[in-house]
Length: 355
Image 1 (cartoon, rainbow, N blue to C red):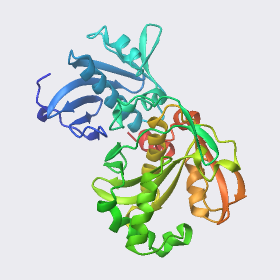
Image 2: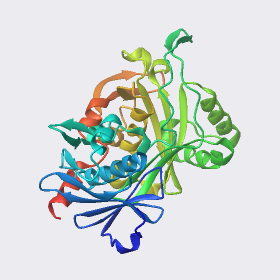
Image 3: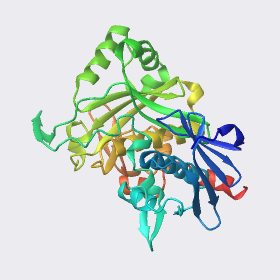
């Protein structure tokens, strides 16, 4: 479609996380998916009937898939109380079966139905290397533990997602020691951080620390950013090989994490409801065999436990590490997607009723 987007005046705009050239412009009930300044797809939203009607678009199936995917993510983001959308595409009779084959829709009574828990599990919208297949299962032994062989570590940005209530993109990239050492060094020496991490020290100590994490097959260190502004450091781990494994029945693809929010400007509810579920989203998408995400915050860290409660984590038990008393917390894949925990539904639902 060659129409210029300048004629589509948008009251709202929703960006595709990993493709900055792709966005959804909304004016009342009219949606336009825009790519590189041109309208790729036009749709009408009938929110009362939970219908999304394709009015015009490209013939290319891949572009059609991208357009419907980002438009659907936008609608479910703007309307968190909507549980399903019937996609009507009479002008593209083959589109429904194509979308069903790609896992974006299901066919019910000869209609294409879009479900939020399925839409949010399509890796292409958020993972930079979405085409990478699941790593083959091959068990190995390390330190007396039998676990799956882990894939080679990625480099650079791995995940990006647009956050509508911030009008910004949250992303995660793999740590680069030369680039990120001064930043992580400052954060680890912050007294607030050191109270829980106990890793304060000089640059050489932190260079060694990051290099060790990067060389460990079961760990992945990430820097979180809002736009281009780094705000936090994250360590992801496979639980089966981690120190947490002896304290519960760890499955092969359980994953866990540690976090430092290093910049005070990015503290508060609006930000934590953006980065925390996005980090969980990344871990669930990175390997479809990950059914549980675990954590072991200090039992005394009341604020972090409160945030995890709100994010859908269950408190399983308290236990003792050699260095701290910890609380085992757990988030199920099924709950994350079924309950739409990637967004603060209660807050957005209030906005929706005011439209």
